Length: 162
Image 1 (cartoon, rainbow, N blue to C red):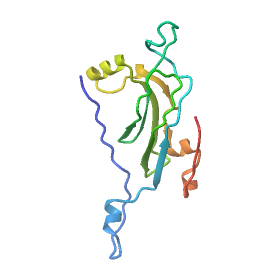
Image 2 (image 1 turned 60 degrees about the vertical axis):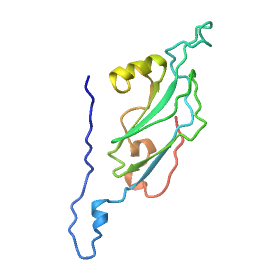
Image 3 (image 1 turned 180 degrees about the vertical axis):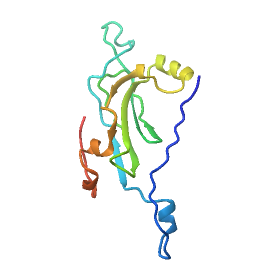
Image 4 (image 1 turned 90 degrees about the vertical axis):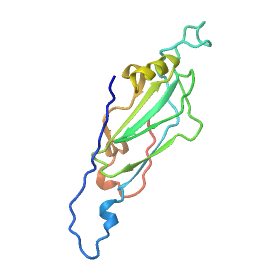
C-alpha cells in the first residue's frame, strides 16, 4: 500500500541583518528548550493476546511498547513481553527539542508488539490503531503537558504524572 510522509516546516521570524548579527543564529536558531520524557511504567493495560502462561487461566496479556512523537521525531521504547502492568527498568528517556511550546504537539501511545502485530506491520507499514492499548489525551501541546504557560517556561521544571 502507500506510506504517509510528513514534511514539517519550522516557524521562522524575519530579522534584519546588521554588522553584529550572527549568521549561525539566523540559520540555526537555538531551541527554546528541551523536553525530556522518561517512561517508567504503565498499569492495567488492556490485554488482547493469550500466552502459554495465561492460556489455562484465560487471562489476556499484551506485549507493550511506548511510542512518543513530536513533529518529525519519533521514539520507541523496548517491548515488555506478556505484561499488562509493565515496568521499564532500562534507560527509557527521550529528549525532544522545543521551539514553540504552545504550538508543538506531543503524542504518547502504548502499542501491542505481539507476534500477530509484528506480522501485520510487515505488510501494512507502521502501527495500527487497532493495536493501541493506551493513549495520552491527544493532542497535547508542550505547555499543556507541563501545565504551564509559555511565559512560565524560563527555567527547568519537572512534572510526574500518569
